[in-house]
Structures are given as structure tokens and as C-alpha cells.
Length: 159
Length: 159
DNA sequence: ACATAGGGGACTGTTTCAGTCCTATATGGG
DNA sequence: CCCATATAGGACTGAAACAGTCCCCTATGT
Image (cartoon, rainbow over all chains, first blue to last red; front, side, top):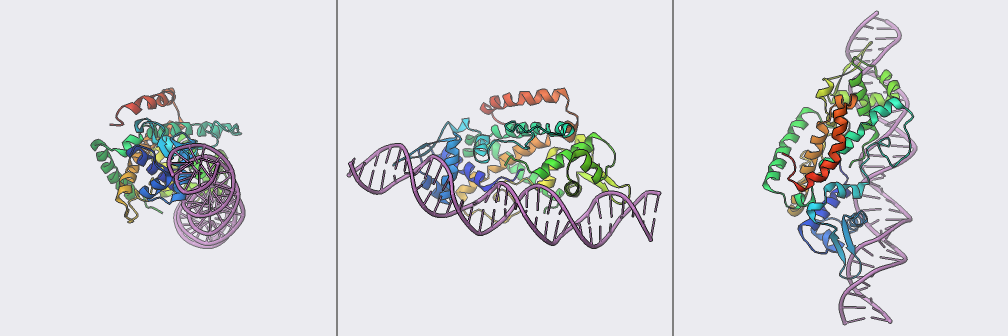
């Protein structure tokens, strides 16, 4: 689950860059500034536009702009724009009408909703503004997390 | 990101099943009870044992048991047991020695740590006990949390 | 000793991912 | 009006990860 795809990484980088520097940006410029290969950056920006995270202006002097203020866009929106709706198992995905044949298992799997909600909530609380302009309090949190990562890594051998 | 793999789904189902019914269980029995193909269930259980989520007893009358009480095992442990450490981008993964050549981008990508921490915290707060025996209080919390996420976005996040 | 049950890894077909490229469409400026 | 610019959308490909199975080894209770 928690290994994010490169495309999503790019999306966050691009969106954060848009948040940090106001005004319309051509895909080419964004690609150069973020060191992301141009056609790939373009692809990502298209998806962001489709999802309503950014707005696009076609034609000469066109480009991309954030659809809303950075404080009003959670990273969950950016992630979902690339990876689709956050639905963990088919069983917990309400768009599919496929009912579980095994009631006993469904009882267990229905709890995936808890996990979905918890993760989505955590992601929605981080906005592009937080990503673009991290305050000192946030930086402390980041520093602490790296220690925590050490601890977790020592506890279990990696593969 | 947030589409979980089937293996991880299996892992949670198996671990939850172990939490719900105390005592040692053979992989075969667990596979039958959870409707998971036997060799696959066995593979998952091996990983859970490696990660220290469950303990195994070899030989005749052997089987698997939870390593700790259900309340003491967060679903993040189960997920990490299958998918490896929660590290989102190479840049934020400290096991790789590859330093970012582009300082400007690194500044942006370092913020992935925020996301990692937020997600991991959310997952660690859900235990196998919650999954096995969801109480009414928890269900209320789920319903409330989605509304709360909206409200919390305006305020400063977390402690 | 023997049947039982997990440990570990090799192997394979399928799917997804990352990245590129091509064509169509919209738009501003000379 | 025409052209350079810039996004929209999708087709295509090689590489990598996933899901699942199978085999051989080791441990253990009867």
C-alpha cells in the first residue's frame, strides 16, 4: 500500500511548485523547474486538470494554475487524481456492485472502511500550503519522523 | 498509493481471524476458514511470522498465534509485514544512499515525510482488536471523522 | 520413525507502471 | 487570416511488480 508511485510523487511535486509560485505555468517550464521529464510531467498535469486540482489554459500563453488556494487543496486530492479513488479492496469499493459471497469474510473486510477513512482523513489534513511553506512546527515533526523510521527499520529486517 | 494489494488484504483478514479466535491455528485451517487459497495463505502467514506479528509453532500440532494481544497490534504492522517499510519515495527512503542532486526538489520531496507520518499514525491507531470486535463507539467515530476532516483543514494539523 | 506442519525460496503468467510519441484542438499575436 | 504555441487525449512499449503455485528442507509431537 504505502509505497507511492512515481507518477504520484511527480504530481505532488508539481502541485507544490504551483502552490509556491503563483501564476500560470506552461508544462514545459514546470518540467524544467522540477527536473521531471517533460512528456511525463505533461501527462501528470493533464490528470490533475481532469480531477479539478489545477485549471488549464490552452493555446499560446497558456499553462496551468491551481484550481483553488493552496490551503484549500489537500494532498489526498492530488493523490486521488493520479491513482483513482481511494478504495482498498473491491469489497470496500462502493462503486462496484459485486457483493461478497462469503458473509463471514465480508464482516472482516468491511472494516477496511475504517482504514480507508483514517488514511484519507490524515491525507486531507495536509494541504499544498503545508507542503509549499512548511512552518517550524512542521519541520520538527519531520525531523522526529526520521528517527522513528530508524527505530522501525531496526525492529524488522528488510527485504 | 491507496490501493492495497490482495496479499495485504489477505494478511489483515488472517490476522483479524487470529485475533477473533484465540489459540493456535494451522495454516490450512485458516485458509479454509477465510476462503483464501491455501498456498497463498501460507505465504502470507510466513511473512507475518517474519515480521513478528504472529508466532509460529512448527511440527505436528503446530500453527500460528498472534505474537501479542489484539489490542497491541496495529494494522500498520500487518501492512508493513507484507509491503515492507512505509517509504514513499526514494528520496524519503533513507536506506538508499542516493542523495538528491536537485536541492530545490528535495525541499519539496522532503515533505513526503509529513505524509508518511500522518498515514502511519492513522494506521497504528487501528488495532486488530478494533478490526475483530468493532464496537459502537468506534463506528460513531468513523462517521464523525469524515466531517471532522473538513473542519480540521482550516486549523493547524495534529499535536 | 513417521506423519504433520512451518521455513525458505524458485518459478511463471498476468497485470500494472513509467515513459514516449502522435494527432487533434484551442488560443493569442502579427 | 495564418501560424506558432500549448494543452487534450489516447496508443504504444519495455520494464517491473503482483499473485499464485510448487518443491524441498527442517522441526516436532505421538
